[in-house]
Length: 151
Ligand SMILES: Cc1cc2nc3c(=O)[nH]c(=O)nc-3n(C[C@H](O)[C@H](O)[C@H](O)COP(=O)(O)O)c2cc1C
View (tube, rainbow, N blue to C red):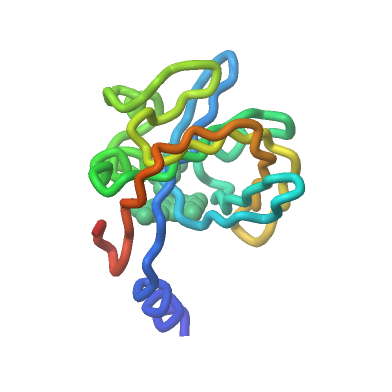
């Protein structure tokens, strides 16, 4: 049945985000698609992050992170941040802007969040972030992931 579940998931069209955070010692970025808006008051988002992912332990309460909704021409950065590169090397890409919170300046939109709740569930944690700032290009042409391919 697990194979059928994966087959169903592969049929869905998923928006692709890169979530990024840093503390004094290190920075991490990873590609995610299990992302959804939670509430409008306050504006909040949830991201499901595998507990084995390098970014997981960096996302502690009150940590700020960026949630970058990728544009259709950013499949390369999605690949880099999902295993093609590891660790800090993921930031060796001209799309990154290194401010207090690293973010992708050519993304369709950037949601700047502060981690308010961490809900461990099975192999993952639901990271709930309140939105503190938004950068939006106004363009509607997001990168889509379906059936193992970027569209
Ligand atoms: C399109 C796509 C969506 C993904 N979505 C998620 C996700 O929502 N949550 C998650 O934990 N991993 C997700 N992954 C897997 C991580 O990006 C991948 O395991 C990454 O390498 C983890 O970072 P790490 O290697 O630094 O641990 C996704 C991968 C791809 C290609």
